Image (cartoon, rainbow, N blue to C red):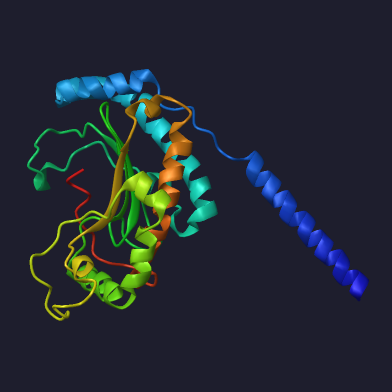
Length: 264
């Protein structure tokens, strides 16, 4: 029996090693977007009209949409290693280029940035805490956290911080995270929300209406193979904060749809 157990242990180890080797061999690489993609976005910013875009829609599909799906697939293979609950089908992760002008002060029909979001699985696209990035011809932005929570989300996150603020503050003190993304950002109420102690030691956190980390990277990365590893590096550093803020929502399955990151 011992010899059989040893054999199975050996086989298990061999299988694990093979799995690791296969995963490593399959590690996706992304070459970066082409300079033509950046040129397209730059021209779109100057000609944000249907009459200009429609004859060039195929260019958008080839230069931007298809590579963006590939990049999301590459990111998913990385998320599988450090944040598997955020792996997202590319078609759901990538935002449409068409602007919903009903809810935006900007009435231009097309967005001039390309974006993707990775929410907690089994929750709506913009519910709770998420990973997000976007790029334009002028900017490459990486985001992790909560942007536009609804009332029930606010209450859940504030209640979590009321009880576990010391743990959260410890996460935010991480030197590598502070160096990469700076301090926690988010709008803040003047007064403590109803139901929370006015003199609570985590008052600054509880008064917030948003909780997120955000940083802009060198826009030159977009057209290089360094884009993928740099995105992964920042997203991985933000992961503990994103996951902490999602603790109240782990078991949530369905919620009403919300407006998409309109400010982006």
